[in-house]
Amino acid sequence: MYGGCNPAELMKVVRENGIKPPKRNNVLELAKAAKSKKDNELLLQRAASLWAQSQPAEGTWVQNSLEHEDISIELPDSIRFLPECPYEGVLTFPAMICAMTDWKGNFKGVHRTLLGPDGIGLADVPDPKKALGPIKTASVHLGKADEVMMVSESVVTGLRSMIITPDIPA
Image (cartoon, rainbow, N blue to C red):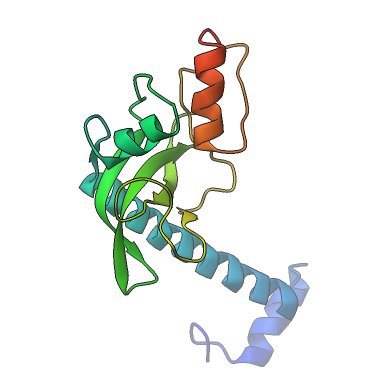
């Protein structure tokens, strides 16, 4: 029974009114989309939690690590330090954590770069660089958006490029 009607009566009303019932595959796709949306919300919450636990990068292992790479510029607010970034649910590492936003500036997730135990280099783990969140249309913004901007393969490459061309944000 559905709303007091048996399935045969319900289908008769649907057909008489020209309503096409959804195909089974469409129902499965809608269910997958709903699950995906819920998963994205959970990922966004986890990313926001990590971002909230982070602190400004100035004077931290992040700044030391970047200076070791000959990058000594004022770091943007989109780059922060997370002293204990979880990795695979078991270990934690110090990390450079970067906010990932869409073109409107909406927070979509974080990019994490796990640092080595001395704060120089990457942690000795598979995949020391990972993103978290529904980041399909997001990126790390290192400067204020302008008519001309750089696109780079990584945060470090973007920062290096900004040293060479300081008038063009990445």
